[in-house]
Length: 478
Image (tube, rainbow, N blue to C red; front, side, top):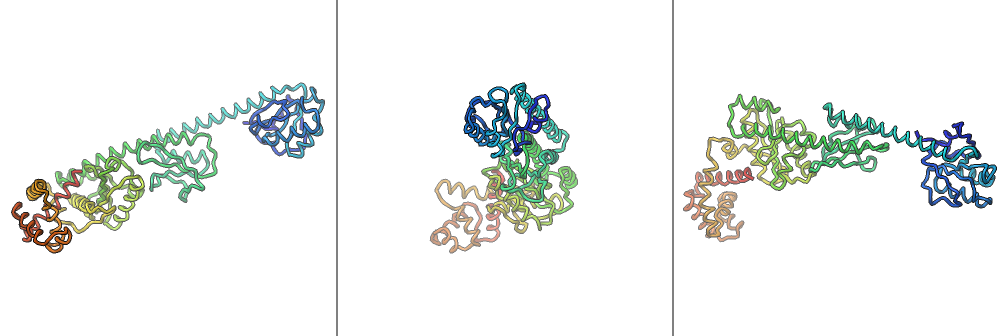
């Protein structure tokens, strides 16, 4: 341990004695020993030193008093005055000034070399440094062992909090991965340390003040960073595996019993009601499929289907909207702009398929969070692999697209507007800023090119279904 003036006086081999009355810094650690014969050594001191001098240049009382003031202002812990060379005893003026400013004075006899004091202090400093290194290495081993033995981040952070004797928290965007305190961390009472991962899911380590950091926090940051990257890889592998199962269920390529067995293998109980939350992001789909989810969804089954993130929750539909908003906020905090679609709550593998297609249909509405509508004919037909709906849609709409491309026309746009306006020519004309006769002419062209008359209910359903399937199919391909 570092040594103090009180400890030095207890070393009998040095023959030191207290020459003053002040004991203000008597038990403070001595950072270093400075030997000087300068009249003004203040600029060469940094604080915490024991200043040793023989007073060779301190002949007069004013010089002695000025020397004491300079040493005191520099923040030294005391003065060791060597006697038997220039001065037979510690000068009274120097002692009086030191007492006035509360600076301890130690008399060093002639037979005690200054180097003996300096060596003793240096050895104490070295021993203290070695002890700190040993504690740091032991701390490193404890933290590393927490990860290597499978304890994960929870055990690592628990040990870290014990070493620092304070509360610890780890946040990831809006989620709290760990918090040993009952309160949320705030910048005014907690120190924050960023955890670099090279990814969007960077975390922040929070340490409640006060605490003493001996260097263990820097090591903990590195370990947490490594563990987070491992968690990302595990997350990607798990989502890919779940995605394969969900894709087979969504495509209807499994018997019911086999689908139930495989869903159970990835943690999904299809005998209970499940809801699909579908997150879609054309701009950030790579980050989307590997990012974390908020804490309420940590126990849900997450999967990658195509370029989308699918989260399946066991719910009757009541909690799904709130969880979807939490997911949306979490992704936004991570810099991922995504659209969330919510499916209905159904049992059995077929119900999971329906919920997925409802969520996909809802996500096409484009809002940050989109709640499901009633199970649509489009969703049911898309869920069936036996119906070549995409081919039918292409066959119905391709003549219109080809005509638009060749002539710069807007037949597809006119058809979409006509169907969305419930067949009102006047409403279409107003929406597209066209004459009503122009709208009628375009509808006649649509009938001629496709063979379907938009004014006939059966044909209108066929065209509406083709447009709906085309939109959803384009989204799935992205």
